[in-house]
Length: 318
Image (cartoon, rainbow, N blue to C red):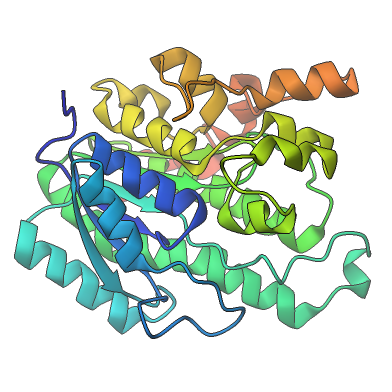
C-alpha cells in the first residue's frame, strides 16, 4: 500500500537529520520527493563539513519505493528558491506537500550564558537560516498548492511547548517556526491548504550519534553519556509522522497547531523503523517527576480571534 503514490513533495533541508528521515518516509509512502539542500557530492556546503549529501537522501527515497530528486538550493537566496519552484511547476504542475526543515544552527546555539553575553552575529545568522528560509520557501512554493486548493505545509520545530527553551536566540527561532505555521494557517483558512508545525523527540541524527560515539546499531550505549538518549528516536519516526499527516483526509482539523511525533504515532498507529514507539513526554514526566506542559487548545486560545481578524474578517484578500 502506497498512500502517497502520485503525490509531489518538497523537503527543504533534506540533507541529513529529520529532513532526510522525512524525505525517506515520504518515499516509503510512494511520493515523489524533491530533496533540497546545499551539500552535494564533491561540493559540501560552507561551514562544518559533514559527509551527508542530498543525492544520498534522494537515493534513500528511491530505495524506500518513492522517487527522489536531488536539487541543490540555498533557501536563503530568493532567485534559487524561485528557480526551484518554477522547476517543480514545469515538471509536475503542482505541489502537494511542503516540509520546511532548514536549520543549520548546530554550531550557532549558545546554551548557558544570558542573551546579553551571546553573539549577536550568531543569533542573526541562526534566525536567517532557520526562519527566513522557511518563510521565503513558502512564499514561492505555497502558490502551487493554493492554485489546486489542496496541500500540506509542515514546519519542523523543536518542542510542542510554549515554554522557554533555555537560550533566547534558540527559543526565538523555534517559537517563530511555530508561529509561522499558525500565521500561514490564518492566511490559508479559506482554502484547503493546511499549515501546521511538528516536532520530533530526542532525535538520533547523524551528528548526535557521532557526538555520543555510537552508531544506529548500538545507539542505546549513548545513554551512558546522556541518560535521556534512551528515549531517542530515529529521523524516520518523525518522517512517518509527516507521511501519516499527508495521508489523512481530515488533516485540515489540525491547521495552525504544533504536534509531536510521539503523539501522532499513537494517533495514527505507526512505529519507528526498529518497531518501537518512543514517547518523549511520558519519559520526561517519569524521569523528572514534573508535568510536560504541551501547547494545547487552551494555550492557543489567546492566539485566535485577534482584533484585526475581528474587525477585518475578510482579510487577507485573495
